[in-house]
Image (cartoon, rainbow, N blue to C red; front, top):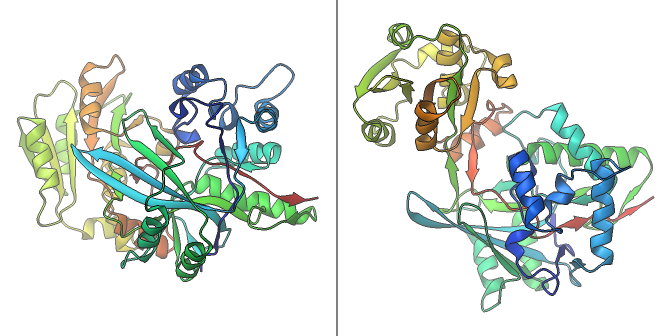
Amino acid sequence: MADVFPFRGYRYNKEKIADPDKVVTQPYDKIDCKAQDNYYQASDYNIVRLILSKGKPGKDRYQAAAEDLNKWIDEGILVQDEKASFYVYWQEYQINGEWRVRKGFVGMGRLEGEDGVKAHENTLEGPKADRLNLMRATEANFGHIFMLYSDKEQKIITLLDEGIRDKEPLVKVNDEDGNRHILWQITDEGIIESIQELMKDKVLYIADGHHRYQTAVNFRDECLAKGWRSVGAEGFENRMMTFINIDDTGLSILATHRLVHGLPDFDLKVLLEKAADDYYIDKYGTAAELYEKMVHNPENSHIIGLKAKGDRFYYSLTLRDKETMKELLPDKTDDWRLLDVVILHKAVLERYLGIDVEALARESFIEYIRYRDKALDLLENSDKDYQAAFLLNPTPVSAVEKVADQGERMPQKSTDFYPKLLTGLVLNRLNIEK
C-alpha cells in the first residue's frame, strides 16, 4: 500500500535566482570534489551548499548547511508554496541520439517496511550516518528518493497530463548532459485525490536513494523515541519522493562497466584459457563489432565484453551453461544469479582474477564507468594502470522488480537509472512538534 500526499514545497524564488541552472545539482552521491567545487563557483545559492557543505569557521558542514538553509528562507531565496501540491516532473533526455521523456510526480510518501517498499541494493553505514547528521541538523528533505510503481494502463500519467494541460512550468533547467528537467505544480484537489486513490494499492520499488530512504526511517525512529510528533503530510513519518511508472516507455537503465587496474599478475591469455571452460569466446577487430554482438542477442544469452590494454582485439564471453551459476551460488534464486553483473563478479572477476566481494566493496582493483566508449578510451589512454575493461548490457527493469520481490539485493552498481533526479527543484521542510 502506497500512501502519498501533496505538500507545500520550498522552491527557489524566480525574482532572486535568474538562472535556475546554476543552483541545481546531481544527487549528492554523484558529486565528487571537482563537481562540488564547480557547483560552489556556480552560485552562492547552489544547493550543494546544503547537501554537501564545505563547512564554515567554527561550524561543521551540517551546522553550516542548517545555517544557510535558515538564512536563505529568511532572505526569500527559498519560498514556500501556499497550497499543498503534487509536483509533476518531466525529464527529456537522449540515449543513442533518440529523445525520450520520463514522467513522474513529486510528493510525500509514507515510510513503510519491506511489504510496502522494496529495495534492490544493500546500504552502507558511512553514507547513512552522513545523511542522518544532515537531517538532524536541517530537518529537511533535499534530494529525491526515486520510487517505481506499476501502472500498465497509464492512469496516473494520464491524470498528470490533465493536471498540467495549458499550464506554464514552474521551472525548466538543463543538466550537465544537456537533459531537460521540467517541473509543474498540481493543486487541483480532485486530481490529487484521484492520484492518491490509484496509488493506494501500489507496491513501491526503490530505484535510487536506498541510503536516503533508510536514513529517513532511522530519523523517524529517533524522533518517535524522543516523543516528538510528526505533523501532517510534511512530518517525519513521510519522506519526499519522486514516483515513476515502471511501465513508462520513457524509463531507461544504463549499464555500468568495470575497469580493472593494479592486479599484480593480470595476463589476458591465461584469463581467456581459464574462461574457455565456462564461456564461448569470440574475437572481434573493432569495438563496433563487439557492441553489435552484445546488443543484438536473440537467444538472450549472457554476454560480457572484454578488452585488454595493448591487445588489438575485442572479445565477448558468452555463458555456456546456466548450471555453472547454480553450482557457484546454490543458495540464490535464478533471477539473482543470472544477472549479468553477478556472472561478471562471481564467475569472472572473483573466479579467475581473485577480485572478491570485499575487494569490490572497497573498490580495490575496480573502477566503475557509465559509458562503454569512455571505458575503452580510459583503458588505452589514461595514465592510470588500467589493465582491462569489462563491458555489460544494462540490467532490465523487470529484473529489479523480481529481485526486490524475493528480498534479495543486487551487487553494487547493478543499475544506473538515467537521467538522475536533480536536487534543488523542490525541497521539503519537516513539520515536527517537540
